Image (cartoon, rainbow, N blue to C red; front, top):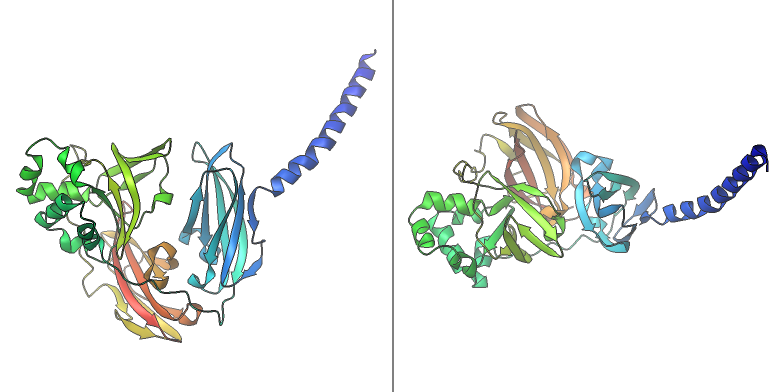
Length: 378
C-alpha cells in the first residue's frame, strides 16, 4: 500500500472518530454544572436550584450568589463533594428584587477552579416575607445549657470574656468538652484559672470572628482567630480536625454565632503574641450613625456612617435579612475617611426585623463589626 493511500485512510478514520465523539462530549457538557434555573430566568418565592457535579478532575463544588452580579459581595450558599446531581431550595425573599447571578465553582485539587455564571432576576413584589428567625440563647448561654462545658464556662468567666462572647458577634467557637480539658497535664487548668491573661490568650485561640458552618470547611483551610494566630483545618476520610483536635459535633447555632465541639484543647503557637480582647464597638462618633438601633423604617431612607480611617483600610456595609449573617447582602464599600450617606430602598426587602452589619476592615483582613437592628414596615 502506498504511503499516500495509507495517509488517506488514516485521515478518514480520524474524521469518523471525531464525528462520533463530539456529540457525546457536547451532551456530557450540557449535563455538567448549573442545570436550573436557566440563564436569564425570573424567580420568586422558594425555588429549586439544581446542579450536576462531574467529580474528577474536580474535588469540590461551591455555589455563591452574586448580588447585583458583583463578585466582591458574593454570598456563600452551599458546598459539596459527591459526584452527581444536587438540588437545594432557595428562598428568594431573603434577597432584594433585581438582577443577580449564581456562581458555581468546580474546584480542583490545587484550589484552581472553573466557574459558571448564571444570571437571574428576583421579582418578589407582593410575595410573602420570609419568616424572621426567633432570637435564642447566645453562645455562653448555649454552652451553659449543654452541661458538658463546665470547665470552659468557668474559664471564660475567669478570663473576663463572658461579655465579649455575649456580644453581637457573630462568633464561631470551637468548644473543648470537660473531657478535653481533663487531658491536659495535672494542675494546668488550675494554674490557668489563676492567670487570666494567659487563659484569655488560649480561649481566644478557640474563637474565629464570623459564622463558619461545617459545610464551609475544606481541607487545608486556614482561619485567623480572635487571638491573632491562625488555625488549620484538615478533612480526611470523613473526619475533620482543627489543628490536632477532632471536631466531634458541628453547627450548634446560637443567637450570636455557632459552636463546634472539639475533643482536645488547642494551644496557640509558642511565638504568637499575647491576645488582646476583641476591640470594643466603635465610639458613637464613628460607625453607623443612622438609622438608630431598633428603628422602624419604610420607603427610601438615608443610611449614614462615619469611617475613621486608620487603623482601618476599608468599610463594608451589609444587610442581614432577618438578622441572619448567613444570608447577608452586600450594600456598599468605601475607603475614604469621613462621613458617607447612601439611600436604601426598603421596598426591596420584606417587612419584618433585619439588621445592618458595618465592618471596619484592617490591613490583615480582620475587622471590627457593628450590628444595628431595624424593622421594615412598608
